[in-house]
Length: 457
Image (tube, rainbow, N blue to C red; front, top):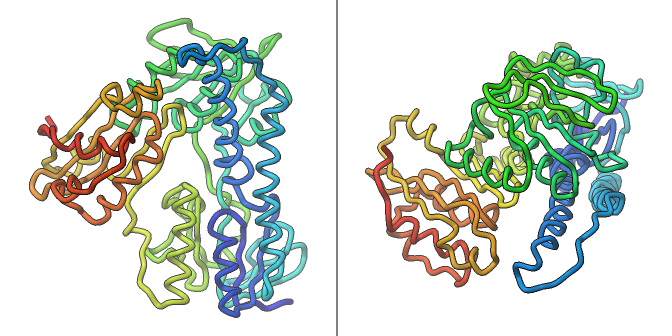
C-alpha cells in the first residue's frame, strides 16, 4: 500500500496540469494512466483531426489555385503521408505529456486501469493506493448505438478513423453534427465520396437554423451528399462494403458505401471504476454528479473533464483544472457554472460560437436584437476568396449587453474570441463599438454588425 496527498486518474486535459500544480505545491501525487497520455484530445480528438483538417484544406486550396492566378498541376493526395504527418504530431504531443508526468519531482506514474476499493483508495495492477484527495479525469468514448445489423459490419468511430491505412472509396457518416461533419469534409477533400446521414430534420440541430442551412449548402457544393430525416436506420453488409437503410422522405431508401463512420455521440468512461465502493454517484447517463466546485458525492473525490458532463470540450476540461486547483491551493470560490459556453465547429469555413443562440434566448424569454452581415461584405473574406457564411450577434434589448454570437466564416474560430470577453463582462454595445480593431481583418466588422440591430422576431 502506498499513500499520496493526491491521486489523479487519467491524463486528459485536466489531469496532467492538476498533477503538476499539486506537485509544484509540494504534494505527493500518483498519476494513473491505462492507455495513451494526453487523453482524447491529443490522441484521437482535437490534435489529430485538426492536423487532418489542415491537410484537407491544403488539398482544397491547391485545387482552387487558379482562382488566385496561380497555375499548378492537379494535386495528388498521398493519404499515407497525410496520416504519417498526423501521427508525428500526435506522438510529439502525447510523448510530451508522458515525459512531463514522469518528471514530476514529487509524483509517481502508474500504468494500468484504476478501480476504487474504498472512499479514499484505488487499486491499479494489484497495488492499492491511498489518497487524501482523488481526482477523476477518465474522459469519454464514442457511443455505439443498438442499431439493427450493426454487429455484422465493420464500424469506424473517431478512434478507428485515426488508424486508417487507405482512403475510403465512399464513406457513409451516420451523424450530421460536429464530429461527423468535420470528418466528412476532410475525407471528401482528400478524395473520398461522402454521404452524411442525419436522423434529424437538419444538420447540427443545436445551432440556429440559418447555420444549419448554410453548412448544408457549402458541404453539398463540395460534393457531399446529405440525407436528412433518416428514420429507422438499419445496417447491412454488402459484397463491396456496407449499406444503410434510411427511410427518408426524399431520395433512395438505402445508401451504399465502402466504409461506415458512426458519429452519434459520446459516453463517459465511468462504468468500470468501482464508483459504488467509493460512494460516488452518477446520473442516468453515467456522468459523475458534481457540485459547482466539481466535487462529487464523496467529499474526497472530484471529477474533471468529459466524465462530469459539464462541457465535453478540451477548453472546459482545462478550465475544470483551473477551478479545482485555485479553490484548493488559493482558497478561491470558483464555480464551473460561471463560465460562458464557447466552442467551434472546424469545418471550412469554421463556426465560432459564444453565449446564447436564438433558441436559448427565446426559451429564456429575453427580448433581444440581432445583427447579421454576410461574409461577402467582409473585405478580408473577399480578399482571401473565402466568402461563405455570415457574422451574427445577439444583444439584449433592455441592457444592450451582448448575449451571444454565431460566426460562420473564414477565421470565425479565432474571431469569436473578440466577443468572449464582452459576453463575460456584459459589455454594452456602445462601449464595444468604441474599441479600434486592425484593418483588414474579419474582427473589425463585429462593431459594424452591431450598427444594424433588428428585433428578434
